[in-house]
Image 1 (tube, one colour):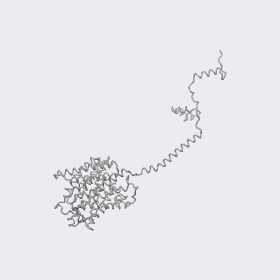
Image 2: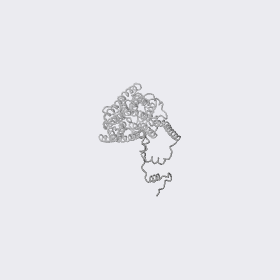
Image 3: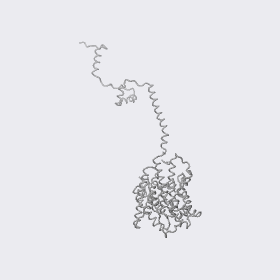
Image 4: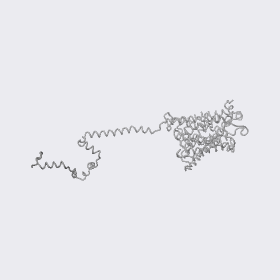
Length: 504
């Protein structure tokens, strides 16, 4: 039987070969040997061996398509270059905006809180301190004390605006600020101090400059001339208060040495306490001390004044955080704790030692606690505040009763006994109870005994400067116009003798 020949070639062998190849397809033959080692191990060969499954699908799907023509490649390259240029342009545009975002910006929450704090601290002087002192003097001298507090508020406001703020907070040396901010030069609506307006920070510090010399009034109540009081407090603000403020809060040497004073233990209370002690000694004792009753004429006024001081002190201490944040909240909490602890301590001591707790005693203890927690408010935990309050209540009671009588000076309203002693106790115990978790600095109880020594150094520097400057100022004023009223005016009362008014 003849086999059919292949229709294409006419050969039986060729047809068998074609038929056999349909049934048996061998694996792909190996690639022909490369002409060189470089060609054998080229990137294209390597890529073919290790191509991914997704790439295989893509290659299979588009294996019949021809590669993109050269004009298309140029279009792709130009598109990529355009995208790179666009990104670079955007970055160049955003760079100034990012730099501007890094600058301090006004925070409405911080500003609102500081506006409130400023009003609270001003309320501490008028009417808080005025009523507190006014209720504790005799009836014939009430208006003189109110007049002194009100006049000091006005005088210190002007002096602070003219030069005091510059001496305290302008750039200067380690001891006093420069004159670049006299008359508030350069202060604008847009000027910021941190996250609040610079003008607001200035007024907040002004309220501190107001209350500090006003505290001294209680030491020489009932006997100093009104004119002498104005000269002394005005000069004292510029020569004592402003430089010490610069030392502690304005970048001066005490700040560089690491002295901790959150809201004014040294700047306000030790300063006022020492000045009050010096003034009480140099002006002399009141007529009738020890022979006639010098009891407070209206403790209701004093209680109202103490309550206003307590509430206002939240602006004093919590406001010193200069922000509406956790530090302000903690300062408020420890202020409340220390105040209550000191008031109760004074009350129980008086109850045990004298048989009866008094209204004057409990409000005096509360003020002592407020004073002592002032330097520590932003650095201690609640347990530390409790200890500081208890210590302050006992120390201020001792200073206002035993120490005053032992040394024989007539501090009429216990300015040194409460503010001087309380400020010293608070400043020292700040170095004991300071917590790194609260204020960033460790105290004695956290293994940093050196902080106590640093606090003692700050106290010593403040006491020495304030005492020397106060003595010199009072002596000069005494030589020029005299410090004390005449005997007739003191006997009839300063209200009538100095101001021509009296309370019926």
